[in-house]
Length: 363
Image (tube, rainbow, N blue to C red; front, side):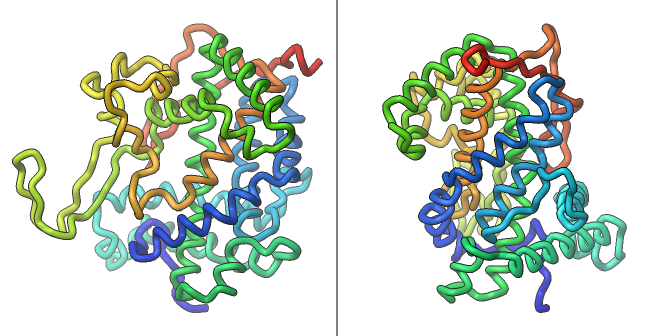
């Protein structure tokens, strides 16, 4: 069976850029295929006349299904009436992995391993279940064999690195994207005028693209800015971390080599020195460009070590919001405020209750 990667602590810096290039070529094309859009619509149907508390659960199930389809060429089947126990086991493992990883940011994992703490035991169980799901889906692949099969056939990466990286992609492709979409729906519900602007943009983009989905998505700058603004105001990660490879001087501070340097994303994104009216949700700030936006949109990191699944996550969110805005008006009770809490990633501190109403053009 080989080495079972412990999710969250593997390092593959020399391979990062190759991974990004590979995902850019193949996964994006796969993501646009019609059956993915259809599965998304199937997930929306049960919630058309209900509050969004039940819909959020379906959202949480639809995203690993899409990621699994891209990686292995098969679906988890989480949107069916009967949910495969193995698929539900994977979802539960993701939650356990996040909960057990948070303490390891402050307590050395090696120490937790030596004392065999409950955090370490939970982390091992979660990692094993995620890895077993990887192996199970690898065997199920049929027509489209996914990125995993392509990497194995190309034989350009060590097998252990492929296993660990694929496992990380499965683990990272669930909560992070679904939480961001929850925040996007929350902010859109509080800005009906923005919903109308986005619908107009989407309608114009569809008309000009003549059925070319990739072309259509390139013609939706306000939609992209909405996702970017959501990630600014509600970043999934609190900090961005890097180790220095050599001694450097930053703003008159000498930083030795091999030191962990953290960028406080949450604090920076809400700092008026970098963003005017930082607590205001304003996607147009990314279109009407403030003085300098370089290194301000760092939600996915940057450089060769940026998020492996960035392209897939961005396009999943674009497709999802396009479907939502075309079909529904998104509403929320006046005066409802939702805060954040930390659990390895930033999540809402209470359930986000929204209401979906049919948009008039869909009736």
